[in-house]
Amino acid sequence: MGQRWLDGYSADVEIYLLIDGKRFDVAQITDGSLILRDSYEIPAETAAELVLKIDGHEEREKIFLRSGSESREEPVPFF
Image (cartoon, rainbow, N blue to C red):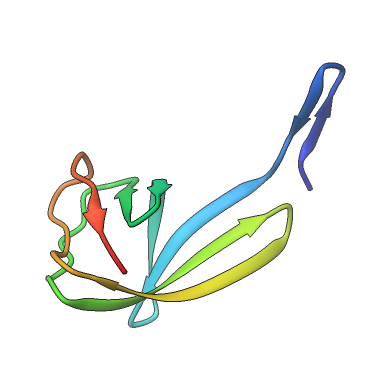
């Protein structure tokens, strides 16, 4: 569960990709791209499952990484 403060609330958020059973942590996500928390080599045209957990509530969506990833600084486009 998230953390309550006197001036608001901070949700417990976890975002990651699952590819062939392996977890890849996501630092940031936007509409159509994501940035990985660490550098991972992921080949182009890779199918993945995007997992988003907010305060224990989990949502999963199958996505496709168009160009793959080699760096944590570069956005990784998906659809």
